[in-house]
Image (cartoon, rainbow, N blue to C red; front, side, top):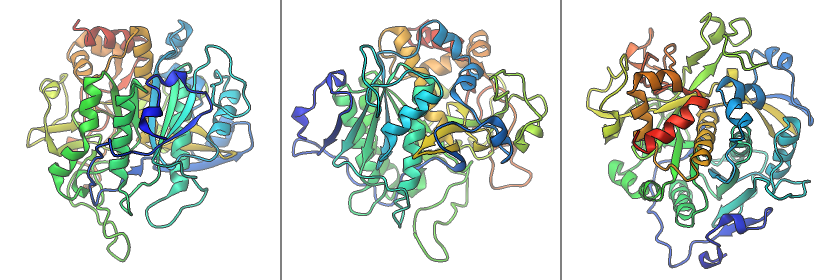
Length: 486
């Protein structure tokens, strides 16, 4: 499809359309960032059951986990109160960017909606659209590519991306049930032939230029050190984020699933494959100051009801080891301090108790905020006829993005870049206490035993959970107020 054929308003498209965009001569593509390999930040996927019905909590507990369904999850983050007031993200579109796509996503989404009594989306399989339905659409960049159920060799693990797609789409829908979802897919994930990162950034630029979404979620990343050319390579890639800010599009990214440790992506094979970077690192795009970076937690609340009274009896061990603690910083949630980007102005002042001891060079801190991410307290995902409990900051980015979609809907217009407003709230003690669950237990240091306290979750901002997790019913109106200067 030529670019000129794509209508500016995505809402005018046929609901079940799958559109392929081939960048033509008029497109100025992002240069290749050789070496860096975007990978899906689904770090732990555990099959729980097969069939259409979701597994019981007892089935999850039997494998040492607790599983979050949409209803209790909504309660745990005080989303249900927003939903009950009629605020479900209607009229707002969230774009989720993934490689390959999924052969079964339309059918999977239909069953996910059915089983959890969520509104059906125009674009699901086996559903007749009705006026006012939220829409699900797919935009393929350059080509639509089948996501086969087994890995495709090398670094192109299509099966991993299929689960990622189901997670992203289903959990935006779970948090913002009336928001539209646009799945943006690219035909490669790495640097064999056409590099993956430039394709992803080009696709986001296209979404922004054509007004296709007000919120973008990125559940992928690679260590800053893996970009050959360092700062220059990243600067070539990040134009879409500047465009997003200029066009009032909110952009989120997962902070990573390796704590403060990451690996080089080359050599690919052999005895020294993917060596550990021997010092604390963070991943991009989460480290970009123009992006809202989302870290992760164990959500140790009651997964049957969503009550934020801690359940310290049920698995996993991390919850049992911290009696009375409702939310704990996930041990491998990405976080730390950039080696590329200087500390942005919005991080100059942080709430009391904030943990910046490892920031010796005055650099950008990661993450900004957090939500549930551990697969040990994971979310239920339906993919290809199977139910999985899934973890990774791939959970936290789309779910927080969906909170932003609700805020856009309540505001009546896109709020755009959110970091200034988030930190403004963080520096107002009354609002901060009302709007965030401040997580002060946990540590993501992977290099020391005992762990370095400079990577511990603490009061205020920390390099595991940022400012904390959202008390959504309070955060949404205050976020709107903060964006508007009050």
